Length: 73
Image 1: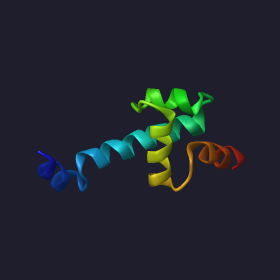
Image 2: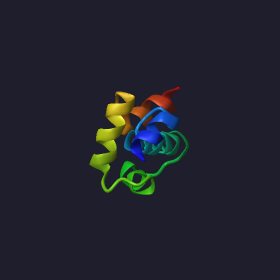
Image 3: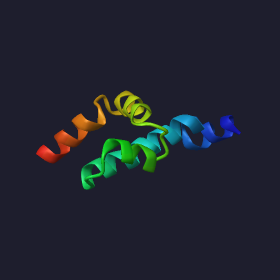
Image 4: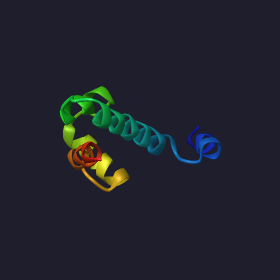
């Protein structure tokens, strides 16, 4: 299944899921006022720390820094 998914989508299922969750979190950070902890739970992470780790790996900055950057623009 994972190999077929990767062939079809271009990335593995877990990578796809993590990137999708981080994209949802990015949208919440840009458009809402929920805490990072609340956003983490909303997009399927068990903790703020888990979201922060994935977010930084994918976007190169923490969710808080991302929010500051997008609000300053």
